[in-house]
Image (tube, rainbow, N blue to C red; front, side, top):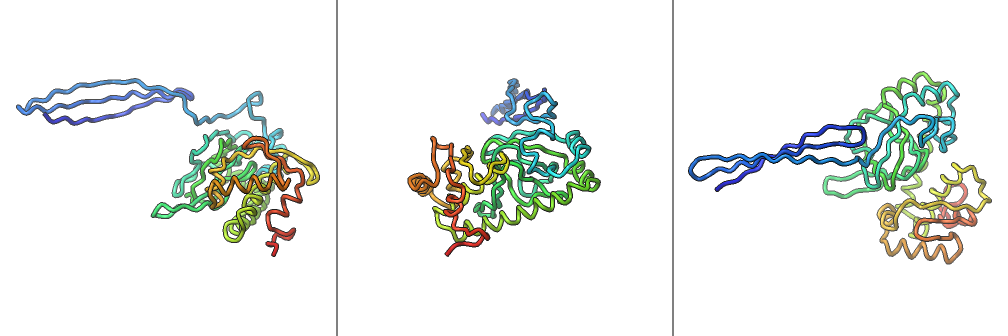
Length: 299
Protein backbone atom coordinates (compact mmCIF):
# COMPACT_ATOMS: atom_id res chain seq x y z
CA UNK A 1 0.00 0.00 0.00
CA UNK A 2 1.33 3.42 -0.95
CA UNK A 3 0.07 6.52 0.86
CA UNK A 4 0.51 10.16 0.00
CA UNK A 5 -0.95 13.31 1.60
CA UNK A 6 -2.04 16.62 0.10
CA UNK A 7 -2.77 19.51 2.47
CA UNK A 8 -4.33 22.91 1.79
CA UNK A 9 -5.01 25.73 4.25
CA UNK A 10 -7.55 28.42 3.56
CA UNK A 11 -8.38 31.31 5.87
CA UNK A 12 -10.45 34.39 6.42
CA UNK A 13 -9.85 37.35 8.73
CA UNK A 14 -12.38 38.70 11.19
CA UNK A 15 -10.92 41.77 12.94
CA UNK A 16 -8.01 40.38 14.99
CA UNK A 17 -9.25 36.78 14.85
CA UNK A 18 -8.32 34.61 11.90
CA UNK A 19 -10.14 31.36 11.24
CA UNK A 20 -8.40 28.72 9.18
CA UNK A 21 -9.98 25.67 7.61
CA UNK A 22 -7.42 22.92 7.28
CA UNK A 23 -8.36 20.39 4.61
CA UNK A 24 -6.35 17.17 4.48
CA UNK A 25 -6.87 14.60 1.77
CA UNK A 26 -5.45 11.12 2.30
CA UNK A 27 -5.10 9.28 -0.99
CA UNK A 28 -4.45 5.57 -0.59
CA UNK A 29 -3.27 3.66 -3.63
CA UNK A 30 -3.96 -0.05 -3.35
CA UNK A 31 -1.78 -2.66 -4.96
CA UNK A 32 -4.72 -3.84 -7.09
CA UNK A 33 -4.91 -0.42 -8.74
CA UNK A 34 -7.84 0.91 -6.74
CA UNK A 35 -7.75 4.23 -4.85
CA UNK A 36 -9.51 5.38 -1.69
CA UNK A 37 -9.68 9.04 -0.65
CA UNK A 38 -10.54 10.45 2.75
CA UNK A 39 -11.18 14.14 3.44
CA UNK A 40 -10.62 15.53 6.94
CA UNK A 41 -11.55 19.14 7.76
CA UNK A 42 -10.26 20.89 10.86
CA UNK A 43 -11.26 24.42 11.83
CA UNK A 44 -8.53 26.43 13.58
CA UNK A 45 -8.87 29.88 15.09
CA UNK A 46 -6.66 32.15 17.15
CA UNK A 47 -6.09 35.80 17.93
CA UNK A 48 -3.21 37.49 16.17
CA UNK A 49 -0.39 38.81 18.33
CA UNK A 50 0.13 41.59 15.77
CA UNK A 51 -2.35 44.40 16.21
CA UNK A 52 -2.95 47.28 13.85
CA UNK A 53 -5.47 50.04 14.45
CA UNK A 54 -6.28 53.62 13.68
CA UNK A 55 -6.76 54.93 17.20
CA UNK A 56 -9.33 57.52 18.16
CA UNK A 57 -8.93 60.23 20.77
CA UNK A 58 -10.36 58.01 23.48
CA UNK A 59 -8.09 55.05 22.66
CA UNK A 60 -4.83 53.97 24.25
CA UNK A 61 -2.62 56.21 22.15
CA UNK A 62 -3.24 59.95 21.97
CA UNK A 63 -3.44 62.32 19.04
CA UNK A 64 -0.20 63.76 17.71
CA UNK A 65 -0.36 66.86 19.88
CA UNK A 66 -0.34 64.78 23.09
CA UNK A 67 2.10 62.07 21.98
CA UNK A 68 4.82 61.21 24.56
CA UNK A 69 7.55 61.39 21.89
CA UNK A 70 6.10 64.47 20.20
CA UNK A 71 9.08 66.77 20.88
CA UNK A 72 11.63 64.32 19.48
CA UNK A 73 9.77 62.56 16.67
CA UNK A 74 9.62 63.33 12.96
CA UNK A 75 6.65 65.63 13.64
CA UNK A 76 8.51 67.76 16.22
CA UNK A 77 8.54 70.88 14.00
CA UNK A 78 5.04 70.48 12.55
CA UNK A 79 2.33 73.08 13.08
CA UNK A 80 -1.27 72.29 14.00
CA UNK A 81 -2.44 71.83 10.41
CA UNK A 82 0.43 69.48 9.63
CA UNK A 83 -0.23 67.49 12.78
CA UNK A 84 -3.85 67.07 11.78
CA UNK A 85 -2.78 65.87 8.34
CA UNK A 86 -0.38 63.34 9.88
CA UNK A 87 -3.04 62.26 12.36
CA UNK A 88 -5.35 61.45 9.46
CA UNK A 89 -2.91 59.05 7.76
CA UNK A 90 -1.25 57.37 10.74
CA UNK A 91 -1.84 53.90 12.14
CA UNK A 92 -0.31 52.16 15.13
CA UNK A 93 1.11 48.67 15.00
CA UNK A 94 2.47 46.52 17.80
CA UNK A 95 5.34 44.14 17.08
CA UNK A 96 6.02 41.30 19.50
CA UNK A 97 9.52 40.75 20.85
CA UNK A 98 11.57 38.97 18.19
CA UNK A 99 9.20 39.86 15.37
CA UNK A 100 10.72 41.28 12.20
CA UNK A 101 9.58 44.81 11.43
CA UNK A 102 11.24 44.84 8.03
CA UNK A 103 13.29 42.29 6.07
CA UNK A 104 16.30 43.12 3.90
CA UNK A 105 15.16 43.03 0.29
CA UNK A 106 11.52 43.56 1.23
CA UNK A 107 9.46 46.23 -0.51
CA UNK A 108 9.00 49.19 1.82
CA UNK A 109 5.30 49.90 2.33
CA UNK A 110 5.42 51.98 5.53
CA UNK A 111 7.69 54.40 7.34
CA UNK A 112 7.22 55.59 10.88
CA UNK A 113 8.48 56.27 14.38
CA UNK A 114 9.06 54.02 17.39
CA UNK A 115 6.72 55.08 20.18
CA UNK A 116 7.88 52.47 22.71
CA UNK A 117 10.41 49.65 22.76
CA UNK A 118 13.77 48.94 21.13
CA UNK A 119 14.58 47.49 17.70
CA UNK A 120 17.83 46.26 16.21
CA UNK A 121 19.15 46.98 12.71
CA UNK A 122 21.18 44.10 11.30
CA UNK A 123 22.58 42.73 8.07
CA UNK A 124 23.37 39.12 7.28
CA UNK A 125 25.82 37.34 5.02
CA UNK A 126 25.23 34.29 2.83
CA UNK A 127 26.92 31.93 5.30
CA UNK A 128 24.60 32.97 8.14
CA UNK A 129 26.86 35.45 9.90
CA UNK A 130 25.04 38.56 11.08
CA UNK A 131 26.16 41.99 12.26
CA UNK A 132 24.14 44.35 14.44
CA UNK A 133 24.41 47.72 12.70
CA UNK A 134 22.70 49.76 15.41
CA UNK A 135 19.64 50.08 17.60
CA UNK A 136 16.46 52.12 17.34
CA UNK A 137 14.95 53.78 20.42
CA UNK A 138 11.66 55.63 21.03
CA UNK A 139 11.24 58.63 18.68
CA UNK A 140 13.71 57.17 16.13
CA UNK A 141 12.52 57.06 12.53
CA UNK A 142 12.15 53.76 10.68
CA UNK A 143 12.25 53.56 6.88
CA UNK A 144 13.64 55.66 4.06
CA UNK A 145 11.38 57.77 1.85
CA UNK A 146 12.36 57.51 -1.78
CA UNK A 147 13.69 53.97 -1.47
CA UNK A 148 11.56 51.04 -2.63
CA UNK A 149 13.48 48.18 -1.00
CA UNK A 150 14.80 47.78 2.54
CA UNK A 151 18.57 47.34 2.84
CA UNK A 152 18.57 45.94 6.39
CA UNK A 153 16.64 43.64 8.68
CA UNK A 154 14.91 45.46 11.55
CA UNK A 155 13.80 43.24 14.42
CA UNK A 156 11.93 44.16 17.60
CA UNK A 157 14.25 43.52 20.57
CA UNK A 158 11.34 44.11 22.94
CA UNK A 159 7.67 44.72 22.32
CA UNK A 160 7.58 47.70 19.95
CA UNK A 161 4.77 50.12 19.18
CA UNK A 162 5.19 52.05 15.94
CA UNK A 163 3.35 55.07 14.63
CA UNK A 164 3.26 54.29 10.91
CA UNK A 165 2.44 56.00 7.63
CA UNK A 166 2.02 54.47 4.20
CA UNK A 167 5.12 55.50 2.34
CA UNK A 168 3.22 57.06 -0.60
CA UNK A 169 1.08 59.25 1.65
CA UNK A 170 4.12 60.28 3.72
CA UNK A 171 6.18 61.16 0.65
CA UNK A 172 3.33 63.34 -0.65
CA UNK A 173 3.16 65.17 2.64
CA UNK A 174 6.95 65.44 2.77
CA UNK A 175 6.84 67.34 -0.52
CA UNK A 176 4.19 69.74 0.78
CA UNK A 177 5.27 70.31 4.39
CA UNK A 178 7.95 72.94 5.13
CA UNK A 179 8.70 71.28 8.49
CA UNK A 180 9.04 67.57 7.71
CA UNK A 181 11.96 67.82 5.27
CA UNK A 182 14.38 69.72 7.54
CA UNK A 183 13.39 67.55 10.51
CA UNK A 184 14.02 64.36 8.51
CA UNK A 185 17.46 65.70 7.52
CA UNK A 186 18.22 66.50 11.16
CA UNK A 187 17.22 62.99 12.26
CA UNK A 188 19.24 61.45 9.43
CA UNK A 189 22.37 63.28 10.60
CA UNK A 190 21.68 62.13 14.17
CA UNK A 191 21.42 58.56 12.88
CA UNK A 192 24.74 58.98 11.08
CA UNK A 193 26.37 60.11 14.33
CA UNK A 194 24.82 57.10 16.12
CA UNK A 195 26.16 54.74 13.44
CA UNK A 196 29.67 56.13 13.87
CA UNK A 197 29.37 55.76 17.64
CA UNK A 198 28.28 52.14 17.17
CA UNK A 199 31.33 51.46 14.97
CA UNK A 200 33.56 52.88 17.68
CA UNK A 201 31.79 50.86 20.36
CA UNK A 202 32.27 47.52 18.59
CA UNK A 203 35.70 48.26 17.19
CA UNK A 204 37.67 49.84 20.03
CA UNK A 205 35.87 49.87 23.36
CA UNK A 206 36.36 47.52 26.29
CA UNK A 207 33.54 45.39 27.68
CA UNK A 208 32.91 47.88 30.51
CA UNK A 209 32.87 50.79 28.07
CA UNK A 210 30.46 48.95 25.74
CA UNK A 211 27.97 48.33 28.55
CA UNK A 212 28.32 51.90 29.81
CA UNK A 213 27.88 53.33 26.30
CA UNK A 214 24.70 51.37 25.60
CA UNK A 215 23.28 52.35 28.99
CA UNK A 216 24.24 55.97 28.28
CA UNK A 217 22.46 55.89 24.90
CA UNK A 218 19.25 54.50 26.41
CA UNK A 219 19.47 56.80 29.45
CA UNK A 220 20.00 59.85 27.23
CA UNK A 221 16.92 59.03 25.17
CA UNK A 222 14.82 58.51 28.30
CA UNK A 223 16.09 61.70 29.91
CA UNK A 224 15.37 63.72 26.76
CA UNK A 225 11.85 62.36 26.31
CA UNK A 226 11.05 63.04 29.98
CA UNK A 227 12.64 66.51 29.75
CA UNK A 228 14.98 65.95 32.69
CA UNK A 229 18.22 67.86 33.11
CA UNK A 230 21.56 66.08 33.44
CA UNK A 231 21.72 66.81 37.18
CA UNK A 232 18.62 64.79 38.03
CA UNK A 233 18.84 61.24 39.35
CA UNK A 234 16.42 59.11 37.37
CA UNK A 235 15.36 55.51 36.79
CA UNK A 236 14.52 53.79 33.55
CA UNK A 237 13.60 50.29 32.48
CA UNK A 238 16.14 48.38 30.40
CA UNK A 239 14.01 46.51 27.84
CA UNK A 240 16.79 44.07 26.88
CA UNK A 241 17.81 40.80 28.48
CA UNK A 242 21.42 40.05 29.36
CA UNK A 243 21.48 37.57 26.48
CA UNK A 244 20.30 40.20 24.00
CA UNK A 245 22.81 42.72 25.32
CA UNK A 246 25.60 40.19 24.87
CA UNK A 247 24.53 39.52 21.28
CA UNK A 248 24.35 43.21 20.41
CA UNK A 249 27.66 44.12 22.02
CA UNK A 250 29.71 41.12 20.91
CA UNK A 251 30.19 39.86 24.47
CA UNK A 252 29.33 36.74 26.46
CA UNK A 253 26.41 36.69 28.89
CA UNK A 254 28.86 36.11 31.75
CA UNK A 255 30.88 39.19 30.77
CA UNK A 256 27.73 41.33 30.60
CA UNK A 257 26.66 40.17 34.07
CA UNK A 258 30.11 40.82 35.54
CA UNK A 259 30.25 44.34 34.08
CA UNK A 260 26.79 45.19 35.40
CA UNK A 261 27.89 43.99 38.84
CA UNK A 262 31.10 46.04 38.63
CA UNK A 263 29.25 49.21 37.59
CA UNK A 264 26.81 48.71 40.46
CA UNK A 265 29.60 48.16 43.01
CA UNK A 266 31.36 51.30 41.77
CA UNK A 267 28.07 53.20 42.25
CA UNK A 268 27.89 54.21 38.59
CA UNK A 269 24.42 52.68 38.39
CA UNK A 270 21.89 51.19 40.78
CA UNK A 271 19.99 48.02 39.90
CA UNK A 272 16.56 46.95 41.04
CA UNK A 273 16.00 43.45 39.69
CA UNK A 274 17.09 42.65 36.14
CA UNK A 275 15.51 45.58 34.31
CA UNK A 276 15.31 48.68 36.54
CA UNK A 277 18.39 50.89 36.20
CA UNK A 278 18.96 54.09 38.16
CA UNK A 279 21.57 56.65 37.12
CA UNK A 280 22.64 58.69 40.17
CA UNK A 281 25.13 60.84 38.25
CA UNK A 282 24.69 61.24 34.50
CA UNK A 283 28.21 62.65 33.98
CA UNK A 284 29.76 59.75 35.90
CA UNK A 285 28.08 57.33 33.49
CA UNK A 286 29.39 59.38 30.56
CA UNK A 287 32.93 59.12 31.96
CA UNK A 288 32.62 55.33 31.95
CA UNK A 289 31.89 55.25 28.21
CA UNK A 290 35.50 56.20 27.39
CA UNK A 291 34.37 59.24 25.40
CA UNK A 292 35.38 62.79 26.12
CA UNK A 293 32.88 65.62 25.75
CA UNK A 294 33.83 66.19 22.11
CA UNK A 295 32.93 62.62 21.25
CA UNK A 296 36.52 61.33 21.04
CA UNK A 297 37.87 58.31 22.89
CA UNK A 298 39.80 59.12 26.04
CA UNK A 299 43.34 57.76 26.10
